[in-house]
Image 1 (tube, one colour):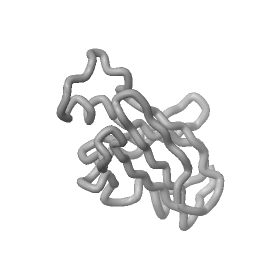
Image 2 (cartoon, rainbow, N blue to C red):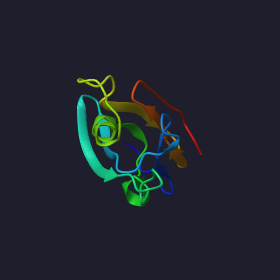
Image 3 (cartoon, rainbow, N blue to C red):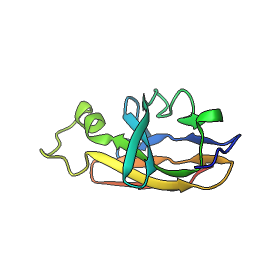
Image 4 (cartoon, rainbow, N blue to C red):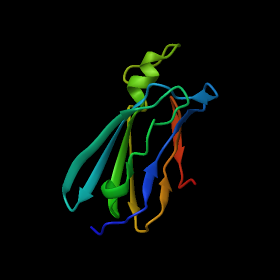
Length: 121
């Protein structure tokens, strides 16, 4: 993987069922290299549904294949309301590639029964 000086990776999570940021959701970031999957960071969203710092930046940022796992089930179970057991959504993995020396933003919009993501800015 080539070093990509100046790039960074960020995320945020919005709870579309409640219409608010998803505070307190755990997130893990993995670097993928062939069959290898190496965890490089674990964070929890703040009250704005964001991370307090970029997931990757500076010397840690490398182009290549990545996976972010959003632990939505733990977040949803901690909320109000009755949910089925097992949950429809528990861990949400998003696999993506970063090929440029730029800002990659990978947000998650989540509810108990659906999610979406996109390359944000």
